Length: 230
Image (cartoon, rainbow, N blue to C red):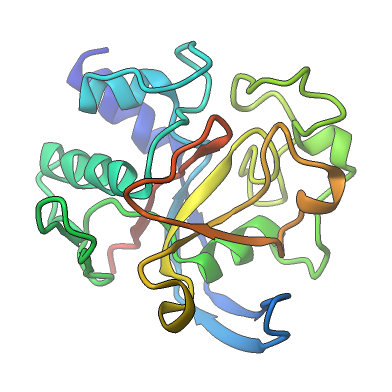
């Protein structure tokens, strides 16, 4: 994949998400809070293995195929991809890395590629509805009952109303946010459910978290976002 093809593919993938407001809820603490969402850009698909390889020159995934979502990568590996992609496009990077340490500074105002904030992720997943899913589960997601215990090529299930595919199922998606620093330290959030999850876990509202450097699994990937240029 040459640079022109990569740039064209990414340009075609970025969907403009309108501004709005969403209420989030944590099932562990029972806390609820509202977040105002500014307009932003979100990729139509999770990052696929061909695009990941073009930037990182590695194939970390357990299941291999160009159009399969990249998985078995840590949160830090996902943000390194975002930074390198930003540099390739001549954009400002969103993450400042400090070697092998866990202190990673996120600049949410930079114009480069980044992981979505979890409020942005849930807001985009629901696509203007208040439901826990944007359609019948078997029609929109790969999960335990239909996945045959593996990931699948992106874009085969029905998209939501904003044209986003695989927001639920296939692979979980890392978000930029810390979860609860007082209890979990540097743990980061991921959303959406994966191919091996039961129906009850594959919802727009489900929140999970894990270690940003150490945790990687075969149903966890990511999707890229960008601030909308004013």
